[in-house]
Length: 107
Image (cartoon, rainbow, N blue to C red; front, side, top):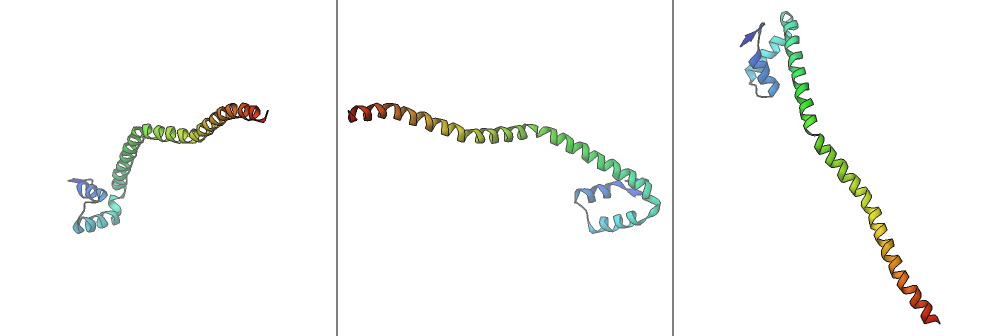
């Protein structure tokens, strides 16, 4: 499909990575032709901004993943403190039982 002096389908195939050697040669001619420079720039700018808006949508769809990562990190940071507090509670219970036993045994 010719549009403004260049084939849009060939450019789209090249941008998607599904191009032939003939398409590559054609694009080399199109990009070297100064007569098509303005139209080609407009077309590629439109393609670029289209890709940017798609990436923004994908980024917004991944916010929940980032939230989950932060949640997991915060939980792992707090777990060592919880382990220490469990150890301190256990140790204080054992000490509360053993100190009177040692005092009674000493008398």
